[in-house]
Amino acid sequence: MVEEDPIYKTLRAISKARKEGKFSDLLLVCRDVKIPVHKIIVCPQSPVIDKACNGPFKVRQVRLSSSLLFSQENQEQETGVYEFKDSSIDIVRQMVEYMYTGKYSPTSHSSSDELCDNTSPITFHVRMFELSKKYMIDGLQTFATCEFMEAVQQEESLCKFLRSIPEIYSLLRTPSNHLREFRVWHVRSLMAAADFDAAAKQVLDEVTENVPQFAKELLNSFIESPLMGYCHLCGEQDPVPVSPSHCRCKKCGSRGARLLR
Image (tube, rainbow, N blue to C red; front, side, top):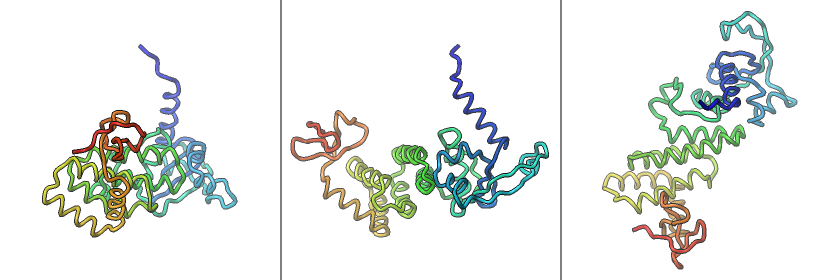
């Protein structure tokens, strides 16, 4: 039997302490929900929260009885409070989950009707991406990007995928955002590889009419890279832009790419 790496035991112990409210010295507050955390875990990952806790304008300090929060021994402790004013509690909870475990799940611990009814995994990852940018959590930003791309590729309904585009553009604030670029290229690959029925064409018309920026970026992608195909070096999973000259892959520069038909 292979013995477990000690680092995983340590991580589980830290995560367990968070869930039980032990040794907490910072409260993250979102929509009147209090999440006890540890500065030593949170602050090194977010320069924004670190500055709020340790800069010249520190977060307010309150003296709380731990029995009020965690039903443990009645011992007062001084705790900092940091408030998330414009975020969903489900997103903040999963942000904390990532800070302690290195991952999160859009379906875990959902508490709001808004998340259950209106937020797909794709848009959840976009919201997490924006939160990670706001609080400068680099690892979370990378993880959310990967989760977003995987969720996009796993979406089986073409119409549902197209209908999610307006919300994505409303959430992403950066004009030339990598997530939006990926979405444009994914739409192009679907247009090349799949037959658009009347319903899909109607949805695409509505999206391009209601989201002019998407229409502009989609058109620009055709102008800059009119041909798409598959490259044996880059892999056959996803289409890549191809140069007409010698069918050269624009991603890696190799010749002999296979055009989409």
